[in-house]
Image (cartoon, rainbow, N blue to C red; front, top):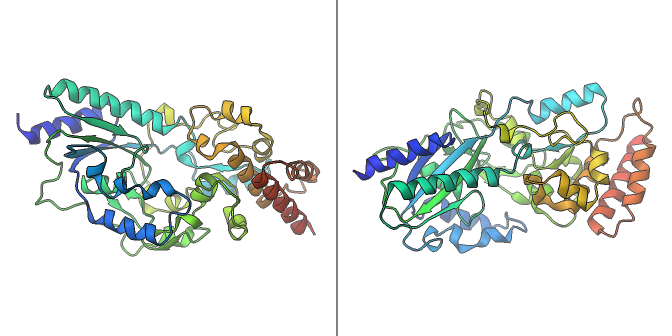
Amino acid sequence: MSRHADGAWIIERAKALGFDLCGIVRAERFPELEKFREWLSLGYAGEMKYLEDPRRTDPSLVMQDLRGVIVCAMNYNTAHPYSVEAAAGIERESQQPRGWISRYAWGDDYHIVMWKKLNALVDALKERFPEPFAARAYADTGPVAERVFAKHAGLGWLGKNTLLLNKEYGSWLFLGVILTSLDVSPSLDPAESLSPDLCGSCRRCLDACPTQALVAPYVLDARRCISYLTIELRGSIPEKFRESIGWHVYGCDICQDVCPYNRKAPVSPMAEFQPRDQGQENSQMLPILERLAEMDPSEFQQTFRNSAVKRTKWAGLVRNACIALGNTAVRPETDDGSRTEALFRRLSKSEISTIAESADWSLRSIQRRSK
């Protein structure tokens, strides 16, 4: 059996397991990996020190005898409104202030969903190829640049918002990889061209970013990114970004919401990616902000079990909820705001400095706007 045929079988098997896209690429030091070093040197990674792992720019350090990378992608789009549309709807309905959780975290933890399917593909490889070989699966969990491998495997191009873009699926894609010592031919022949960059002159993602985190096309300063500020940053969120964060309590989808390639992106059939308890007080799509701010650690663990939201940790989510409440003060026609103010007064005495400081800022912000 030819190596090319083996590669075709892998891609076919991956799609049978539920992946929407699959490609194979040689484990090389692609130019984008060298640019990543430059990005790090500019300090754009902020406090994400794990990105400085040298294995991220040299895949040969990840696994001995590494030859190829199998890249798998899974669509997580749903039929629900995008963040700007949802915000307008909440405002019209005069409901209790709610927060926005990034689309990818509405359902089950994608790390677990992807990792199980990737390992099912590894098991299939072991049945198909009897000779001993190494294989290691990562679902956004290893020191690898999934987007770079995905680009060179032919799955799409890297857009101006720095995400992988596919002409059919847009950017609503989870990426996972299997690093292997198997010698299987790449999905793209050396004579074939990579997916063309179809961003053209469009700059909607850059212009729409509330914090101007996209400092240039294809360049993200993570220190300004709402996703970084609400998830990765463990300390206090800089005051200069707080109003721009708006109602976001976990991540941000704006640069994807405005992307033309996401307008007609298909909806995922995966039940695991549908929002939990939509419309309810404990909705993981549009949670009530006061409820988030009042959560204790045990309730946080119970509510977000098997959810990607765990990444921000309890103190981070309460901090974020305080700031979002400060930006979405209770409207006079629905509440006089006394309960929110009482909540902030209590939280401002918290032993957790990031919570206390954020609650105090939000209380002052509400009082200032009410004058």
